Length: 331
Image (cartoon, rainbow, N blue to C red; front, top):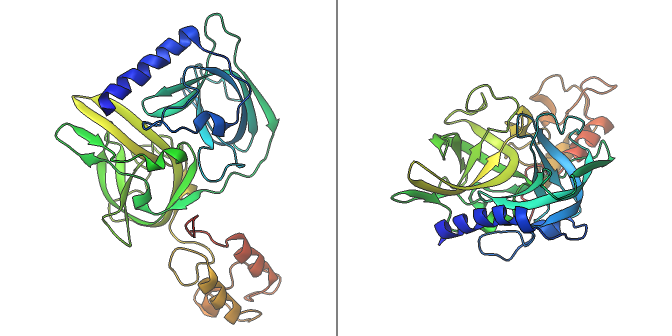
């Protein structure tokens, strides 16, 4: 069933170029939300105007991309990939810009919904407007490894058994408390497996192909056995065939070194999150002085303040900034 659907969806994308319908300005949510069992956008094949969102990542090259997320929708269906068709077309766009788009084609291709920033014959040219700059990026949705479906291996296929993660497509996500368990998976053998440190049977796939700090196939931090408190990325689905093998899998795409968290500031009990247990430890050392190394004062002297080696208001401010880092979004 999935194989047939993949062929049909790709075909519809081509058909849409010939007879695209024009819709009113839509939010990303209205473009992405779907009840289709295969995750196909209800706007597939249409040319639309999009109210847009904040650019969370930008990729250059001959087919540049923007990842755009609307922070007004926190529970899913709020992000989309924008694909350009000429080098440098998004050079004026910066991560943190809120961008709006006009005359873009919605196309579900290879499992992912794209806004194609391309002019089609007989159609108006696409437009991108920067509505504001310097916006904060949406906070990643925090999940455990098993909440992003990993594919299972068949005779000639690697496929997911459910599309529950579809609503998170293109959104920023963070997988917490994981270890790199293996490498060399996926269509391009560029995926590696993150396994939960709580239950190693819970796994997800990650790729660094959009990571700006990668020289080889993986980021230098990615080694089998390496533990992370968290790995942040953009969720993408890939559906396709290669050398007789059919693929349908989700991959978390890291963006840079900052997406890998080895240790969280303010995580005073070393359990990879910042919560009330950490605040209890912090409070024990409030206004203490003589914190001359990382081990003293329970690690509560987070940053250097006006009083050397003291747990003071600056440390409290830093603690508040880190509050609930690493905690699952539904807890």
